[in-house]
Structure formats: C-alpha cells, structure tokens
Image (cartoon, rainbow, N blue to C red; front, side, top):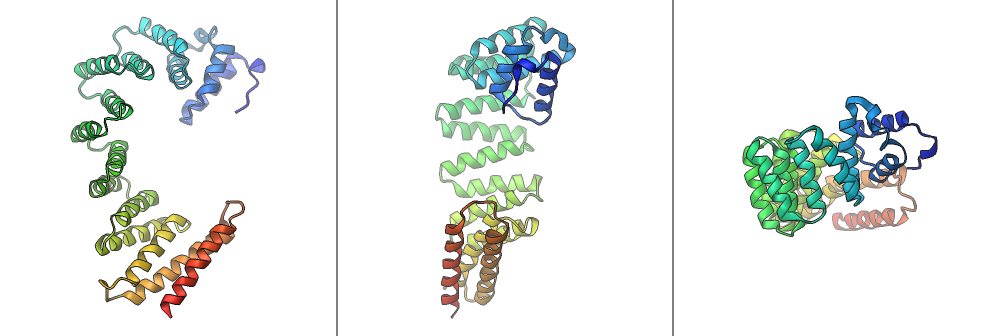
Length: 293
C-alpha cells in the first residue's frame, strides 16, 4: 500500500490506524513507517486512543523485526500500567520473537498463574511448541486447553491441522466436526471435512465425503473444489465393486458435478489462461462417458 507520509498529519495517521484496526488488518510495514515518520512524537495528542495505537505499533514492530520500537512502546505501556497482564503478554511476544522461548514461557506461566481464565497465554505457549518443532507436545497441550475452552473454533482448527501433519486423519475429522457444530452454514468447513474423509479412503469414508461435498455445494453452488470432490467421490463409488446398489445414481451425479464444474470454469472463472483446467475437465468428462458406455 502506497501512502504519502509527508502529506499526512498526525490526525490522518490516527484515523488510518483506526481504520486498519477496525478491518483487522495488520499492515505492519506501513504502521511502523507511519509511526516513525509522523506519529511517534505526536502520539500524546491521540488521547485515550494512544494505548490502542501503542499496542498496534508493538505488534507491527515485532512483525518487521523492529525490536527497538517494540521495546520502547512496551516500556511506555508498562510505566502507565505496572503489573498489567496485557502488557506482560506483549513482553512475552517480544521474547518469543527473539526466540528466547524459555524466558517467554516464564512470563506466560506467570500470567496464567494470576488469571487461569486467560486463554491468550495458553495459546502462545502452544505456538512456542510449534515453533520449536514439538508437534506432539503441542497436540497434548492443545487437547488440555480445549477441555477448558471447548468453544474455541480456532483451537479446534489448529488441532485439526496438527493431527493432519501427524497423519491422524480420524482425529482430524473429529476436530472439524466440532468446528462444524459451531458453524454449520459454512461451505468451507463442509468442504474441509469432506477432503479429510476422502483422504481416509474406503467406501464408507467416500460416502461420507460425498455427503459433505453435496452440502458444501448446496450452501455455495460456485464452490469448484466441492464440485470436483463430488465428482471424484461419485466416480469412485460408481466403479467400486463393494457398492452394487445406486451405481447408476452415482454415475449420473458424477456427470452432473463435472458439467457444473466445466460451466463455472468456462463462464465464471477469474483465472487467466485457464485452458489447461478446461482441458483436464474435458478429459475427465470423456473418461466418464467411456465408463458409462
């Protein structure tokens, strides 16, 4: 993003920072440059919003490895709020960014000891385990975390990713089912769960995957991944000797899914030069017609 720092006043920068916070955008490099060029010496003019700006600058500084700025802003907050758990979290984040993991864990443990209901430091400890490559320890810790914070969708998704990395597809599917309970109208969650079930293979899992792909398409008819996944599932079932019933139904559904995928690819795709994609779908469609004959 190109911003003309020289023409921006401190109030313009304040408003820009506020807009980025409301949009949940980090824009770390811009935040740091605007802080140095304009707002650092004028931050006292922003009133009570100053604390939010300092926190925003700390995160941006850690993202861009400007540890000097992060340290200075953290000290300003610490002077105003001595003993604040929120400020302690930023100190731990700085230590984590410096790869001083043991020291960071000590700070995080101190936060948890003072407030056992605080989820953020527990999640940071798990992030440190991942950074150290301790995936099994991260899984164990995340399971313990979810016993106390069962409604944390991000934690369930993270646990799913960790299980997938370990090849534990059944446990990964369970995690995504938990996410689905919290957000049953998301086509992406249905699609993700279908992907996992398809990867697990076997007739039973393929049938379950077909159901989830179908629901994903029902929620979003333009989901190409779900359409192609449905085609793959139905093609597998149509040619499986273990499934004698409804083979023609699976074949028809596979043909419909492929036709829909071809239609969306040729008419609605925003991908430039997608001739290879269309050729692949044409080949799959031709193979399907040969099998049906």
